[in-house]
Amino acid sequence: MAGLICIVISYLIGSISFSYLIAKKIKKVDIRQHGSGNAGATNTLRVLGVGPAIAVLLLDCAKGIAAVLLGIVLTSDPLIAAASGLASIVGHNWPVFFGFRGGKGVATTVGVLATLVFTAALISGIIAIITIVITRFVSLGSLIFIVGTSIISVVFSPQLAYPSYYLYFLVAISLLSIWRHRTNIERLLKGEESRIGQKATSK
Image (tube, rainbow, N blue to C red; front, side, top):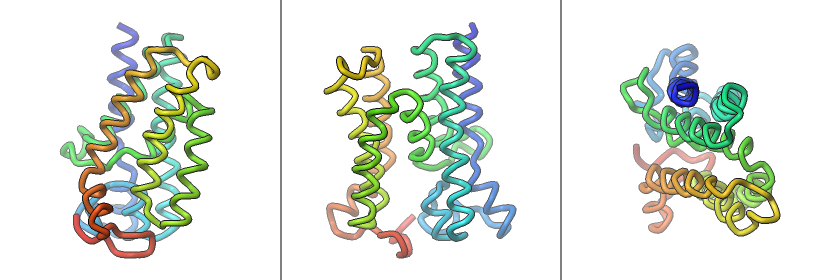
């Protein structure tokens, strides 16, 4: 029962859309009706600027961290902690408080992976940041981070001593991210994806 409660609370935590709330507070607009239409840090950067985007990034990341820690504190079960982290990502993507229209869950996923598999996330994060700096494609860097973290965790699982069942959660998180970024992937392949500093090509 405690595990189920953790998962439900984590979903509700994930459902708090900070980009929506901050955009409403600052500009009285629905962030989902502007820029790329995505309720996340990157679109907040496009619509509101650097300061609000950093705030959204940190707050969304904190949602993932809080969800995993909630599972650990209340149950001491790494399995529940991982499930709670996944629930927070699902909540961010499909928030019950905002008509199930959310973001792509990248920042929340960063928080989840950094808490669950820190070493793998750190290595993959460095590669992702370098990729974003060179290409200015946030979507590409995001995918590299999430999928890369999963691959590193699996390949070096014996050395990093992660629970074997983390594999299933990492695969689920990676597939979810790929699905949410499917239009970005299409634009990347066509050479039409927006770079940092450019307006989004479509919602």
